[in-house]
Amino acid sequence: MAVTVSSERDAVATPIQRAFREAFYAGAISLGLFVLFIGLRTDQNISNELILVQRWVLLAIVVIAVTLGRFVYVAYAVPAMERSKAERAQAPAAVVAEPGFLKRNFNRIGLVVLLLYPIAMVLLFGFQGSLKWVDNFGIQILIYVMLAWGLNIVIGLAGLLDLGYVAFYAVGAYAYALLGTHFGLSFWILLPAAGCMAAFWGVMLGFPVLRLRGDYLAIVTLAFGEIIRLVLINWREVTNGSAGISGIPKVSFFGLMSFNVSDPNYIAKVLHIAQSGAYYKIFLYYLALALCLLTAFVTIRLRRLPVGRAWEAL
Image (cartoon, rainbow, N blue to C red; front, side):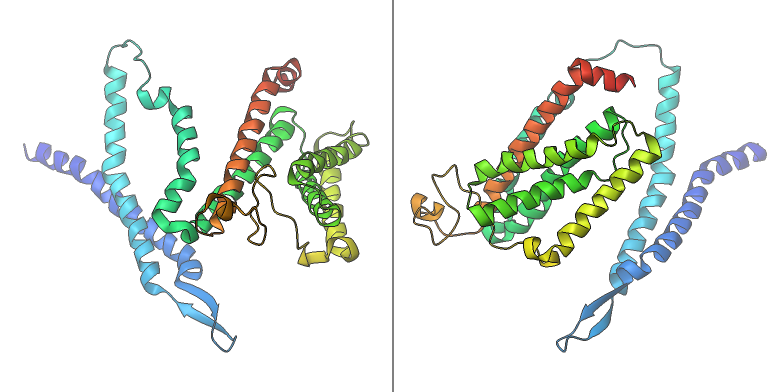
């Protein structure tokens, strides 16, 4: 009887003991990893001198959160998942249930969330406070999503290890900036023109390396990316070097309304609303979202075409 009780106590205490041990290890590892990233931070004082700011309280909060999270996961979540797995293994085969509402309508819900995101940020933080959220966490992410979809076609479907893919993005961006500042063309003309310019350089690079594969293709495309970067930085007479190109004309609302405060058809003047820089960011967000959806549609259709199926079969 005593042996049975002792074994039962050991069985109950084992997950807790393991949780304490792993929580201690997780806390020690997080302390070592975050002490230089969170505990210490460099800053500049009023005299423009570099100083070291100590944030031990924030570091302690992070370490405690990691420790408690690991403890809860090992002590309670892991045994619960193991019990659930054992119950499913012992249960008889059941009829496959229909997917739930969230799974059936996941794409629609995601699209609604994306459409309402700028409005929610404005309601939460106001027009000026929403600039960071709409720009950094909206527009920039959508731009990189489009780049990722394009890179997925090259590497994921075609299987070509292209390490200079971002160079075409730079070519299109600088083509837009140079044509806009020197010729004053509209955004709706510059957008396809920049895409055609990037595609042209893609074709120019594609023909010489058409027969290359593997590491050789990676080296050539990496070299192309470095060449583009060095040319854009050092050709100061054209690209203004690392300072970049300024005075790029803003996007207009299909020529009907402008986002420049000095223009007579400024959106706030036309709609008789308060002036704010958030209008421009919100418009760019929805424009980037529309381009993202177009990119997704083209990518999906391309995968269903014979050439896309041939890529996936490689």
